[in-house]
Image (cartoon, rainbow, N blue to C red; front, side, top):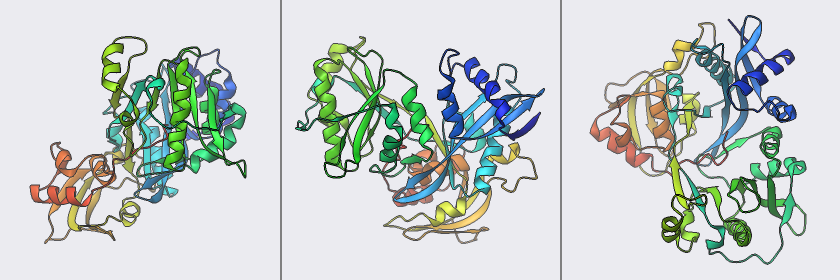
Length: 409
């Protein structure tokens, strides 16, 4: 077994693995996969001269309460049929984390195939994301008087720039390479975008991209909505409503700070009537992404929370160190610290005798730090332990909106 950087000869072997696991159909245009490869830094595991496992890393940033932190997005982890149950995925992903942390990334994130596996590498689960399905004709929003512009795959660069400049809130993610957006646009020939431009400059200001299950009547899957101010979001909802004379159902992720049910006429009645059908109106909640801190000092020093202040010891356990070779510069962030969290936060090595102590895994601590779950809730698990007084103090300090990635990967 050998872990190394991707080279051109690996392309067909990694593509074969993607076909084996069902992420890519053999008949699909390899250009789609090529663009995704070009957007990523890739480590492969070589077995018997072939790349049989790989991890794709993409650069971006994450909005932490208004501060943009360098992000390592783990975009894909794959193992072929002949390399399962050998521990390859864990080793190559841990090595990617170490390399990205050494390069200055503060935090890492991924979409999980199942809860539990990536906890072994220090990841903690985010909050529930809400995906609503509803009849667009039921939207109650002001009608837009101007026609939208059409957007297609050829406009990927413009749409990508618009995504990067969208209204961002706590937890939102940017992925830098334009090929990320280009790949998403090409996965379905029937996909399309609608949006609006600045009437003076012609710049694209807000838009959405739709991938239909059935072009004629839907459902239509809204892969993303991009806007810079709230009135633009309402204008996009107006476009969806205008599609309601033909389309019976749209599916859309609920944006941060918005409760989409507020914009529907009779959501509960519609849910009862449509239950069990192809066009069922419903609200689906699922926690499917995870984050972990890579640079503890960097993250704490960029933590500015108004209101109360709390100081405590932290005994942090990082399971990733078990997967890393000793020669790597970064060996996880486990250790003993004392820190103060507040408007100006700081962290130092070592414990202080006069402070209460929190004992936590990296994943659990990341969840509290991000605001995914309160300390008192995390205290019910075995990897987040402190006195009730400290847990309640931490609840009062980490008061922030639920994090929303707003860009799946």
